[in-house]
Length: 270
Image (cartoon, rainbow, N blue to C red; front, side, top):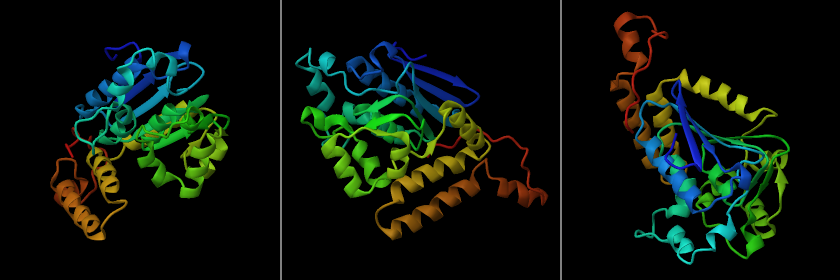
């Protein structure tokens, strides 16, 4: 379990279960919650034994967004969220979304109930999002006269059409899980999203952890940008995989039979 009561972390069978643990406040984001999520992400980045992360919210909602009343009690809290020494890096508010992409394994968010504002940015930062059909999602900052500033834009521009993103942001419209899937904000719909996340996690664990990690980094770096760099990374990462301890091609060359039952070793650092 993490040090803060705001987030619970449990690791079982190479799966890290992260749950937002402020159900009495609909998992709304106060300063302690921001710090707890950031600390959990940093801890998971260092753990090369895990192969999947599943993020969920306790209680009736995934996360109802910013706890404005709590944050505004302190004059320094908004500054702590927004400050950064490097203007091109993530501040604390952005890191709770962008930080999931710094973990070298697939991150799956399980969305139920409210997933508003900052909660949606957290979910968008994951690799896969599984929601209930009646989940409630919204880019809600416009209701407060604000713009989205928690790093979700990086994922939004990949998952969602520009015109749809503008409309959702301008209107702060609340949509359900089915609409969110149509718009590209959600990957899968399920009446039992936690079970669906576990099923996907078990499939991913069966794959080479080096390959899964390499694909995440390759796609993140090369989905947009110069084709030449994408071609270079494809070749470079493939060579690293072939030379690694988890290469089944190497085992096949030695035995002339694919050793599919040989357990994978600790994930390579990418």
